[in-house]
Image (cartoon, rainbow, N blue to C red):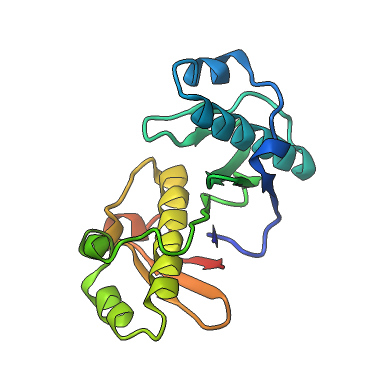
Length: 196
């Protein structure tokens, strides 16, 4: 799931199996995970290495990628982006910050989002659509992943994290989605579109 605030401007996406992205970290990055379990270390390392590869493809200067208050990446000057991982794969999307206020990417495994959590994640109108969906597992996973992508783009653009039910997602049959944000963030990012 990828979300753009400006789909006509260049971005780079890099990704693959976590084991394929196990390069060295910068000292500040290593310090972020020194107490983490091995699984988290592998995911973090893969995400940072993957992001640096995407930055390099974009023509950007490769440097340390810090970690913010919400565990979001702190990108090198002139770059914005997003990192995601599952148990086995990682992906990163990057673009130039002069072209994009925020970018988001997310991957989710189907069937992991339990129905008893839906009321914490989806708006009333989304719940109505999901309840009447032919394939609720597919529809709920795609909608949740879109929300996660939007949340990452929003955090990169504004430094603010919205509650998931406040982000309204419309999933389209052609593999695209659009997002409506709560009023305070709507002024900053009036149009968010993505694809899955």
